Amino acid sequence: MFQAIQDALSSLLTLNNNFNSQLSDFSNRVTQFYSSVSTLNNLITNSLSGLIVSSNCNSIGDDMRFTYNVFCIKFMAQIVKLVFCSASLLVLLLGGVIAGSRFGMMYAEV
Image (tube, rainbow, N blue to C red; front, side, top):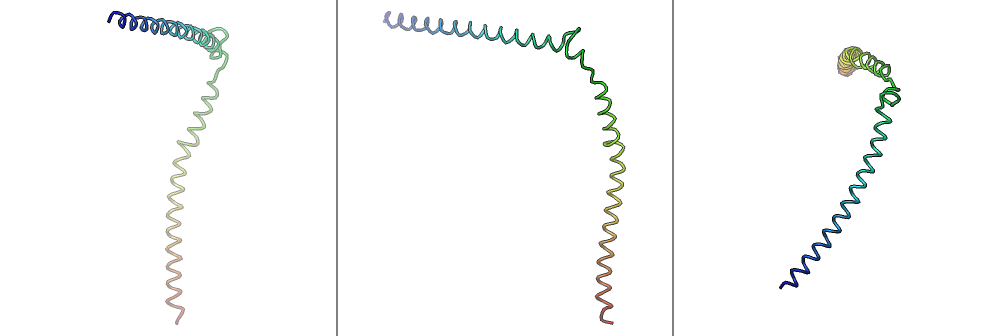
């Protein structure tokens, strides 16, 4: 009985040692990833020579807002009016074609 317990404990010790070595490898990988990401973060957010400081995108943002205002807000009201007028004109034209066809059939026999 004690031999079975000793075998189980030695197996558990072996598994624990394997887990600890894999955990150490994982810790090294996380540290390596952190150092790589911190270098990238420094390249982007450095207050003296970073990408955020060197690229000023306010002019692009202003142009996009202007384009949105012109085409999506102001122009949309004109498009709605144009669609409404076109739809009503289409209905009137369709009614005229139907009425002309009907009157043509009625007075063709006279």
